[in-house]
Image 1 (cartoon, rainbow, N blue to C red):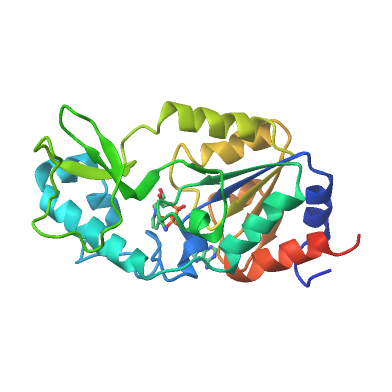
Image 2: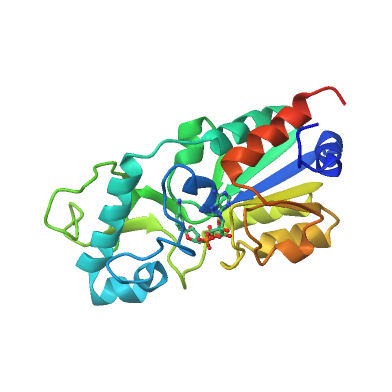
Amino acid sequence: MSQDIPAGLVEALRKAEAVVVLTGSGISADSGVPTFRGAGGLWQGHHPEELATPRAFHRDPAQVWGFYDWRRTLLAGCAPNDGHRALVRLEQLVPEFTLLTQNVDGLHQAAGSRDVVELHGNIWRVRCTGGCRGEHEDRRAPLPPPLPPRCTCKSLLRPAVVWFGEALSRDVFERAEQASLIADVFLAIGTSGAVEPAASLARLARSTGAIVAEINPDGSLLSAMARYIVNDTAARALPRLVAALESPA
Ligand code: NAD
């Protein structure tokens, strides 16, 4: 057994019919992507939570796009880490596996995860805020000036992400809820549990009997409901968890 991976967690994963993983920005921290909370979470003196809002976009779309252009440019130089890759393997080891992510960076897909439920959208997609409502992928980083970018219909484009204060896509959230309701194990990785309704999915799973587990170097708002906690980074802990699962019982 890998040191410090709880044997009970490995056992629960071995027995599980359905496993749900919820990732947050912490899993991408080892790829060099800053988290919102914690050290390095500021951009030009602003808290991201102040810029990732419909109100901020309405007030100053160029500033909000400056923030997103900076994030996209930073992300363009980032690659998936061992944590993302271990989840690709975990998917192959359990009968039913659902990967829910609050991340918008696309790094799970870059690692090889094929079916990722993106609760908060994707930073590489843009959506028209005007009449045409068109949405498409745009991976240019940095974007050619001037910011903010405009649609072919001349309206402003916005990042196709869910901002603070906005509702999640109903279809996407329903899928996340369905998976959480039937989960035997719900594994929260690198999330502070501070953003709703994503965090409510852990409570939902717990309420129907799932074993909740957490991988996070620090405590989170989800720690209190977790039966198993691994206090380590995702890139270190997840390969050990998968190795333990693959080793003979
Ligand atoms: P958060 O910023 O609130 O919390 C990050 C969590 O990750 C903390 O609990 C921290 O202890 C933990 N953490 C830090 N380093 C870690 C590591 N190496 N391994 C594992 N855990 C680590 O993040 P959140 O809970 O995802 O909520 C923030 C919101 O911001 C989300 O809605 C998300 O969409 C967005 N966001 C996304 C990205 C991204 O796509 N990469 C980056 C920043 C923020």
